Amino acid sequence: MGSRFHFEGHNFYLDDKKVFLNSGEIHYFRIKRELWDIHLEAAKEAGLTTVSTYVPWAWHETEEGEFDFDGHSLPERDLNGWLESCQKHGLYCIVKPGPFILAETRGAGLPGWFLDKYADEVKMHNRKGEIVASDGVSLFHPIYQEKVAAWYNHIMPFISDREISKGGPVIMMQVCNEIGVFSWLAHQADYSTDVRNRFIKYLENKIKDIIQLNRLWETNYKTFEEVELPPDGRDPFVSRGDRSRDQEWHLFWRTYYGDYLRTLAGMARERGVTVPFYHNLPGWIYGSGYEFPVNITMYEDLFRDKSEIIFGVDHIPEYVSYRNMHDDRIINDITGAMQGDKPWFAAEFQCGSREYHVVTNPRELELFYKASIANGLTGWNYYMFSQGRNPRHRGYSGQTFYWFTPLSPEGEKNSVYPLVKRMSKLIKTQENLIVNSERKAEVCVLFYPPYYATELERPEAGASSLKFNYAAIRRPAYFDGLLKVLQVLNIDYDMADLTRISAEEIGKYKQVWAFSTDEMNARDQQVLVDYTRNGGNLV
Image 1 (cartoon, rainbow, N blue to C red):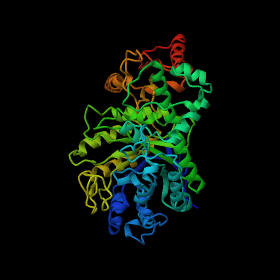
Image 2: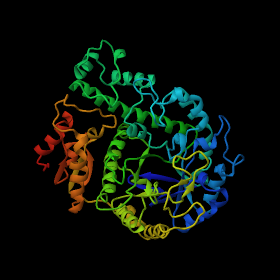
Image 3: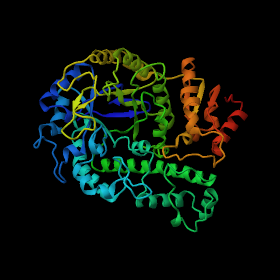
Image 4: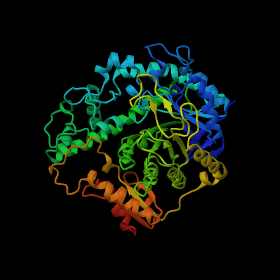
């Protein structure tokens, strides 16, 4: 009989004990098989309790229908041996079997045979029918779903048999990876036939009446079947109704991503996986996390559905300074406001650098690590703990994967290794205090997701007559303005999602801060009105 790893409220638990999840990322497929034990021994010596790794679909199904989890085609494909080695060294394991892994790999983890054979059909297409220049695919295309199911048919029972509850090392699984990143970075949606059909069904279920839709959009459709998808992000708005259509387009994508992750989670559960699930979110650009709110709002439908999937966040400050020391606290707070009382887990916690010219400093990182604990993290995964070598023709950035990590590909210890060891000692001695700490705040800052539904935003061009473009002012006024100032002044605060909170719930605070433009939903305005009428102090 094995143990149980789970989460309850803000904490992770091992059986009945609250634990701080202290993990490091090591990619077995980027390290020589004979060096695995050296890396795992060093991870254990550094005080880690867990290691994390992607399990690339492309690595284990190199030809359609031919799977290798025991290393018979290549020693570095011996996933079974990797997990056995983790257990031998007393380490738990987080597995990330995709289907997408990204990780600077060609195809983002999808097999070459799949892309060679089906790319023209399954790739994201723009409004003109052209393939979008990214690794993204149409997530509900039947061919993609069929091949993912075949991959899951093999990898999920394999994972299930090695879970902690069955005496194995696997304690948690990531469901796909940063799936909204393709539209966010390309500023481009998928215009496939399936997406159009889903959008029409979404409108029929939500708006129901074509007359009402025409009133909102200033259109003249006779039926929902006539509805056209909005233009892509290059065409400016031509009217207020056009902008209303664009907003509904963004809201649709929030249900789309939710449906996709629910589908994958359901497939994994059906195939026997019982460990907790999480999904990772990006958002840092050149050392700033100001775009993170855009990424987390893409999954708003999952939060409203009280999904079992929790969200891991990236904390990638690059150079730690006064400019970005407040970012991790804000990201934690927004995550808490969106997903509720669940753990704050930094799934990609900077420990090294993706780019050679971004040289990390262990002293700066130590400050950042300690601040992250003070700001409420209940777990992290050093990304990367071990540097790796990309298999031939599989990496986007040459042979070397990550720089300035605690371990080199050969297992040599570098300057940040002693820091990881010190942090593990701190966590071990102060774990009870860390996992039981609670914030006591008399001030609440409201977060407003609609102001961040902009990953596909089109140029304003004055058609909607709005005075403020919230995509232009939310960073200086809110992220780097209000929220940073409160931290600099040491004014502690809680954060709440205005779209899901009531006037009564925020009534417990002595003061509430709200960032607003000249556009806000009527329901949410009424919450603020009721709060002030009840005697609240609204800024």
